[in-house]
Amino acid sequence: MTYAFFSHILISSFAHFNFSIIWGEGIQQGRKGSGMATEIGYSVPKGSLDFWQQRFEKYNVIYNKPAEKFGEKYLTFLDPDGLKLELIESKTDDNRKPWETDEVKADVATKGFHNITLTLNSIKATAAILTDIFGYKLIDQEVNRYRYATDAVENAAIVDLVELAEEKRGHVANGSVHHVAFRVQNDEILMHFREKIEAYGLSITPQIDRQYFHSLYFREPGGVLFEIATENPGFTVDESLEELGQNLKLPAQYESDRTAIEAHLVKIN
Image 1 (spheres, rainbow, N blue to C red):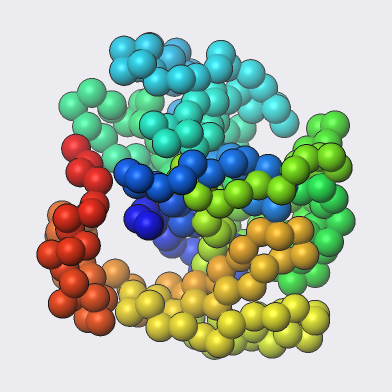
Image 2 (cartoon, rainbow, N blue to C red):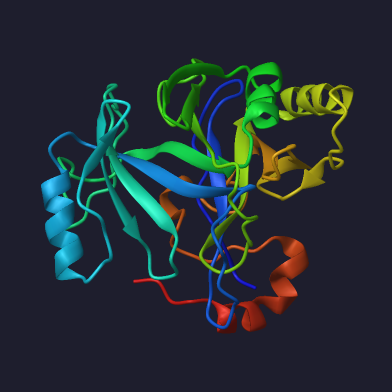
């Protein structure tokens, strides 16, 4: 099974999230459903959706025409493995510096994560985790979609809960989100949340050393696997900031398997 990990978003205190996405050749296809993250939203500049529609047409990307929710225009599309993604014209200022290429300039480029959507048979218990443990607040509702947000940071601070009472349980496999990770600043804050979650009556793992960060995992009552991960020690422990993303870096315990791992990776260009 091949895992692709999105980069963490820098925060202070507790707030933002990232995702672990499962993809790869020969892996069983996942099935969207309850108890899982079903949509990932990226922030894009206002007025950029026409550009993205034309680009999707050019590269035969499956997409839906723009729509609107919570006062924000968005464009839904599927990646090659069937993962549902959204480009969202955020109604709040997003001053994050985008990554530019020859074809995608700053005036249309993605800024980073905007929100994550969790699909649940009932949102009550999951909402309580967001509010009672993580300090999120309900800020809006449209029909069966409930929007929660934290004010700890300006961007990528939104979790949408969609309630579908009759929805069948989803299956995590190819083209699906394995878990949602919330980032904290350091180990002290990490273990503080471990105590809170244990006191809440939920099972949670011991601290796990991932070389670049330390993490905890627990399954919230609605079925979604949550991770809490530290900012420290960071991704510059084994390469410089300027080199990040240019080389495949492996934790020491996997270095002896480098050849086998590289042989199974999907090429990205």
